[in-house]
Length: 332
Image (cartoon, rainbow, N blue to C red; front, top):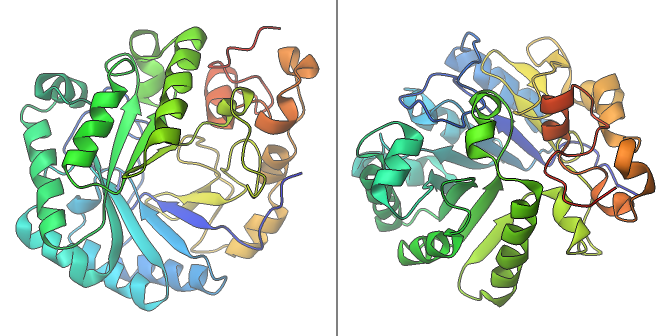
């Protein structure tokens, strides 16, 4: 049984949908929404702080395109938030890395999807992006900012993930996140080219979990609930299945709230709505927290642990929260 906390543990915040990249898997590229000015973002931060949410993570879009990014982070830090962000790194300079440390960032994640520069650059559609990402990582380490590396696992790198881990270790990262491919936005458009088959996902996770269990000098994280079919979740895990809508919420650039950045279903807007009221009474969140097995999940012995896998992928491909995750390899 999932134990839903009093309020979200993490707010994933898309401060802007603007981006200097055009990545082939991007969930947010098709999204459009006006950006809130600095004072309204601070207003929402103060409202969220009332409920003791510990973590804010900036995604996007590219956070470094916000000229007030470090001002907002200083304010959020003063409110008690642990602030992190994910960035493509292209705009990170030594000076901005210093500002990241001074403003209070607890960690900064740099996206690197291949150890081969030409493969990363092609995936991100920007020549020289791999070189810039590596430089960004070095700048952050120079300034003493905790570094993580984020890699989207897909067709371009699923057999080379050990090299990604090695690269992250060489850059001095404390953690590498091996993100499962999402079928949202451009990720849906390009899924036939970039996504893996269920059998390939199983092969990847078997190897990745084995590597994670041996690693002692770097944390290897994976955020895919279908791994419960091959590796039982720790007993102390707060929730089972997808964490979106159970441990986290997403705020869009205009203040709209969605369960997840990959699930474009608006449940309210924090300029006018109360976070706790949405958290406790949203019908959409209630459905996500109480999924019902369908199709092959009806007879699957793993369902009570994985709860149908990734809700975002199921919704993106079928329009139904309860459908089985299309990545699932367990036979009917």
